[in-house]
Length: 346
Ligand code: AMP
Ligand code: MG
Image 1 (tube, rainbow, N blue to C red):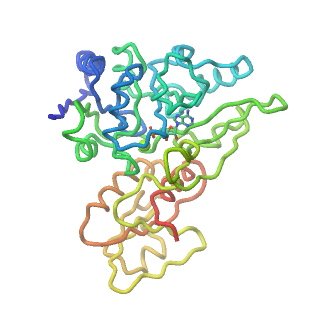
Image 2 (cartoon, helix red, strand yellow):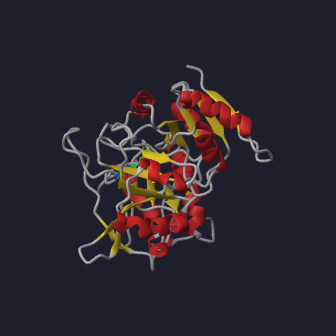
């Protein structure tokens, strides 16, 4: 299959292009689309056959449900059935964080095909802030199911070229709007009300909307990740897979307080936060790759993380990636989560 690549023009409204992409999707095509987090692999969420192709192309196990994108929060009641006691909390979250990098897991409406939610009674919903995703969803008139546009378990793509490398020839179309502005997958929460009637957010995936930002909205609880299941039947909680976002080369994460002992004859490169730590300066590295050179800005590290991991994966001058921790505050939680899942267990 020939994958058509179209550039989104930052100076025009791109209406024709969005309609073209939506028309292809209405016929069952898979179209990779930019969002502010990472590139998504989109299909008409109401077309079960097209959604099945997403799982097939990504090699994604059927137990891993997809996120669906709406063009506006007001469409939410068409795909989710929100219990009365949750209405205020969900409305507040939408008002604060939509359009934006927040995904909410809510009881699903019947119109959402079971294949989208892996048979779960809940659906994950998001309104992206990216004009291309919103424009295509609006033109299609249906929600778009869109997981990250990479092969299952691999690093999420933050550019159209990364999508082309991984899925070129396997999907119908890619819309190229340059690099993603957040660079990490959306924060996922499941809002609920506890026994005492208090609003709670179960944090299913750390992301650009940080725990701190939910302060004053609801209490946040976090479950621990689980190991990969032996079969489809023994499914883990969605999003809780320990190994994910991984390069092909081994990545060793040095957590705070851990030491690193290099092995004789192995070539290492360091993925460093600022590039100026004692480890960066004293270790025997083929190269030191800083996520946020000199300054140590978490937002910059987040934007560059996946692209740097891809680059280091393709670099033949060394064998193993060693990663340093970033500060565990704000966005640092999401960065550390991705580094942990990309790393080999020690
Ligand atoms: P991806 O779009 O590839 O980043 O993956 C979507 C992720 O959304 C899944 O791996 C789950 O973590 C999460 N998700 C989707 N639907 C649900 C759901 N119904 N309940 C809990 N988590 C979900
Ligand atoms: Mg993914």
